[in-house]
Every structure is written in C-alpha cells, then in structure tokens.
Length: 215
Image (cartoon, rainbow, N blue to C red; front, side, top):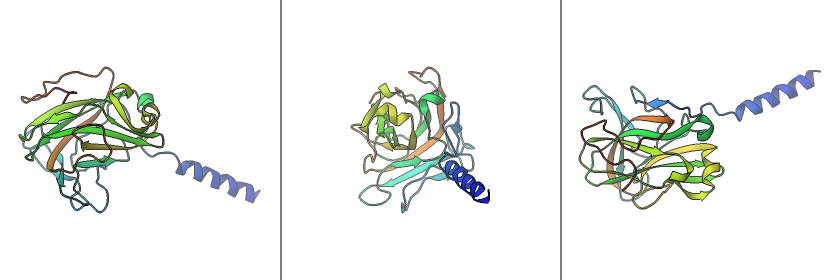
C-alpha cells in the first residue's frame, strides 16, 4: 500500500512538472509598471531590457521597457528580447488574434519590428514588419498572429501557434526571422497586449501614426 501511494505521488509530481505555469489569454497586457514582465535577453547579454521610469506613450509619468543593442558582434549585438512565461500556450484556443504594442525608436536607424514564435513544432514570424522610424516618437502597432499572417522559419506554422513556448520581439528588415538583425539601436516598448476578436487595420492612438502591417 505504501509503495502504491509513493508511486502515485511521484506520478502526480511528474504530471504537474509538465503543466505550464502561464498561458496566453486574450486581453492580457504588459504595462511595465515596476517590472520587466519577464521580457529578457539571452545570457550573458551585457544590456538586458530595463525599466525607464517616465516618458512612455502616456507621458512623463508613464514607465516603459527599453532594450539596447550594441551592434557589432557577440552578446547584446541584436535588437531582440523574448518571453517564456505569460506569452506561451495555444493562441488559437485562447482566442488571441493579434498582439498590439506601443513602440519608439530612440536610435539613429530605422527598425523593422516583428514578432517570432517558437515551439516543439517549429518557428514562425511576422510576414510583414512594422517600419519604426528613428524619430523618438511613440507609434501603435498591431501584429496579426493568424497563421496566414505568419511565415514559417521552419516547421509548421499552425502547429507552432498551437503550442508556443517562446515569443520574441525583434527587428528583422527583410523577412521573418528568429535571430533578427545585428543593429546598434535603442527600442522603447510599452503596453504589449493580446487582442481577441477582429484585428484592427489602422490606429490613431498618437499624433505620429504608421500603417500597421506593411514595410
């Protein structure tokens, strides 16, 4: 009897260890008020994402996340950050149709922003980039996560979006990518939100407005 109870407890522990602690849900939003919301760079980056206390799209008191890329080569050279917690899971089952966010380019070179998604079934990324000019202004961008709006980096797009374990925000000028461009740059990010329902095709959130999908 004791052996059976130990075996059962072990089995339950193994099952629990394979259940993800987080899963994407429609309506969730990362506002970066006091926390980086688990957006990170790979170790040993010398310049991980950091909180900036003010100057976000909401004004002087609005905090946001800043990510710096140093260019050249080595850790921290690419404009990229990723999340392996609340943005994982099955996007279709969660009813998430898009990711929207506020972006600002505080560098000197235009950035081409995309999302990329990875899982056991493959990797996929935004087919169209959001062209972010180097003017220090905040722009509102919407990225569809429907498989028709994504390009396979490898593997199957639909299967990847049904079991995402890593989401990346990066700059890649020419095509969907997992690593992105080596680029000296400073990116501001705020209000990353999972959208449920129809995807908007334009935005007027700020005085400076860009088209949402095309280069």
